[in-house]
Length: 561
Image 1 (tube, one colour):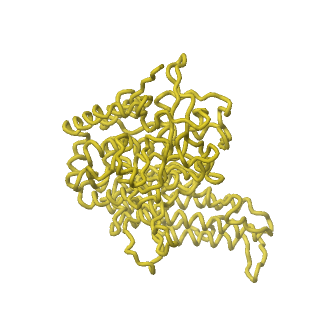
Image 2 (cartoon, rainbow, N blue to C red):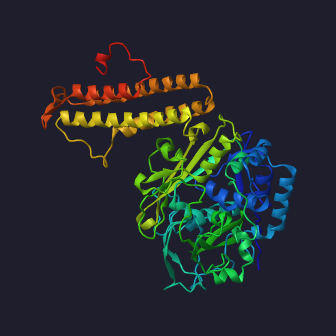
Image 3 (tube, rainbow, N blue to C red):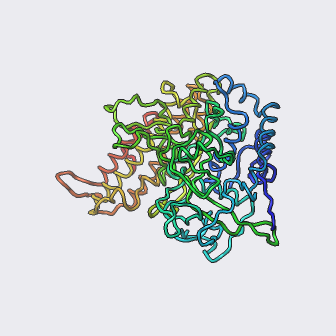
């Protein structure tokens, strides 16, 4: 028998950016022990970062050194800029003790896989099944470089990426049945949901270095030993109690529908049963085949899930939770939906108050750190948002949403001025977009046409938001940098409003220049006259209403002429 070797502890597989701007792949041990040397990860797809962070990096830390118990202890860890000698030793000892469980091609305990997994017909499928950008089955991307008939040769490092991706983001619907799974019917398993991250909009706080990112994502508690919570690689010591409670071993072809045992179990959730099939090629070991079957299903996504914002439903349907994860909207920048990220107050359970948005648990934790002065007001926090839009019956991937924005820490506090300024900026951009759309509709009516339906066609307001996007991001970064300087903040908002006015004016002039001659005289609809003049007047009235800091140019009466 040929044995293939790839151990995540020692072999390079995590692409990291160094502080010198160099990108290279590093082992798990180097990534953690030297995390202060790297600015972050450099994966080729945005969905891979949260998968590796949750499935490997954070659980190793939680299971080896735990997490700080108080804000003061967290501040002491964070202020060092890296793990200290005792923590580094604890991490190294942990990885050494469990090194065999991080072997990707182990005969008995392959990492995040099931040894000997096979379908009833012993059929394997191409490794492209793991990669959503490659055509396979019902998933046929428009610009796929390979067809289903082509062989995709995955390096061991790449195979790890897409293995973890599949546990987090895999599509739903029918999966190949696994030999030994009593729930298989006609060689298949039906009713499979997407991977757990596919059911929410992922929100990850990030810092200036990989170490800071790891610290920002360590929850404010230490896993309780003996509580049953453990990462998936330690689940090979399966207990009889687990079987009694209906929990299937992630090392077996069987699966269960159950709640999470704790945070580490949630982060390393095995949503699929998988076996990678490697082979030797002239270029080295490559994964070309895979067995992919149904895996564990969460009975419900717990409100302790740290990486998503929520909608709290005041009156949920019978049997449903009040907590529903929020998804990212395709085509919408994260800063346009900042209200959900800033909603730090938990609902009090009053159904009369109606549904409410609630930010993620990690951002609430970060607010407590800032309140306790464990983080400075001007800390350069960034928010990485990732989500997947699925198509027909969630069986195909239609779109991937990825964005990153600076988030002023003080904006999380309900009584801080920066929160008001950030909220005002978002509301201003939205109001300008709506005003431009109204102007466009009025001009179409004035010219003898009908407005474009709100859910169809092109709306100029979307183009305006796109043009305002870099200005808004720059303003957020500056607000973050000068959060403790009220005078500078006011100057920033004045500069933002001036630029927003100028850009909005440009878009309005384009619409006015493109309007037909008959729009000048206009036409009457339901006893109201729609004309170029009235459309222009309403638009600039909206600008004056919402951009109050910008000094009016001279001869405002001739604006737009």
